[in-house]
Amino acid sequence: MSREHSRYRWFVVAIFFFFMLLHQTDKLMIGSLQVQITDDFDISNTQWGLINSGALIVATILYPIWGYLYDRFARAKLLSLASFIWGATTWLNALARNFGVFLATRASTGIDDSSYPGLYTLVADYFGPTLRGKVYGLLQLAQPIGYLVGMILALMVAPAIGGWRSVFFITGSLGLVIALFIFFGVKEMPRGKAEPEFENMAEMQTFKFSWAEAAQIFRKRTMWFIFLQGFAGVFPWNVITYFFFAYLERERGYDAGSILFTMAPVILILASGYFIGGALGDFAFKRTKKGRILVSSTGVAAGAILFYLAINTPIEARTQFFILMCLTAVFMPLSSANVIATVYDVTVPEVRSTAQALEYFIENGGAAFAPILTGLIADAIDLKTAILLICIVAWGLCFFFYLGALFTIDKDTADLRRQMAQRAEAM
Image (cartoon, rainbow, N blue to C red; front, side):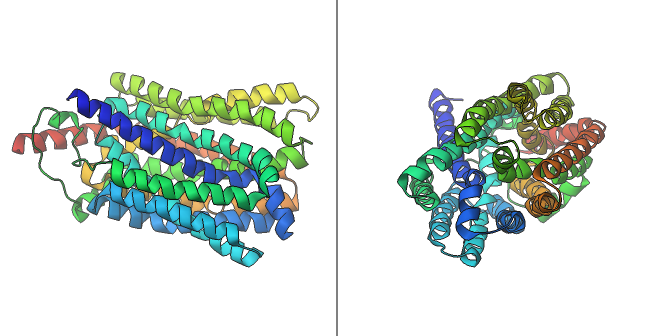
């Protein structure tokens, strides 16, 4: 690999990092704006859950479409289009003046939320299997940092510049700017270019989307467990994203300053967990093909236990609550980068966007209803019960699904490497 290419691929990672950072800021800051928006429109927890579920449902429906398009056409140009849609729909959402319009425009922001499979598969064609976990972990730092930036915008900037609509105009405009950077700055790569079997080849065969190969996704037993853990695993993230700030304010008595100074360190620790998880997964994967799954199962088990202890901490014991939340934040994201890398460890390059999109489709198919379910339980009982019940049950299921994947991953990774070697020999 030339030094120029090596530098350029990190330039691409930098562009994608800022795309994800600003997009996640735009997407996730609505959780910190819950009190402002619900007071503005005078709506209940259930209606608030419906607002957030709307965007998730739209994203879920569109995942297979985005995945298919990414496997058929230039991923960089489609990512630029997704960034443009992000900016435009956020502007429309800021213009809404009643609940019905806000609900509809917020749902439209889900169109671009299903655009990530193309980003991850393009990165997979710049970096080989033993580096992908770390690179994905680095990119996924953007999610919690974006959450933190969104929290600062919601709690500190919005009140100073005219309210929540003003910050939506800012983040929407940034989406339009990033669209230009991706369109003119990111080059497409041949699918499969970074696979070790093709490392020293000057020219490569072009691998094109195939329905036959797409059907093989469902014959990989590891993917069954990936799909199942995905269905359960996103429930806690959506519950925490959209309801945790209101829980801190309304049930634990935190003011805006206390929320910021409690959650900012937690989110920064959470961010480090993405990279730590990816790096640990790569390290373990070099020693055993079960490595990524082992790291993932450890993360969900430890995270669930620590989160249970944190939520059941007495309200007056703020220091204990803070320490337990920090420890939870270390383990919660360990599986994230490893799940993405595992999908690419068992699927061929020309259908990886489709495989990733199917995984997201299945996980969001359940998780899209997490905000509504949380709102219903919260209105019937309280937010603490809703958050704790959904999170612990979901993480427990994920742990058992990862155990199942331990029995299938060796065969599925070996089958892919054999298939790649056969293709290399035929060139």
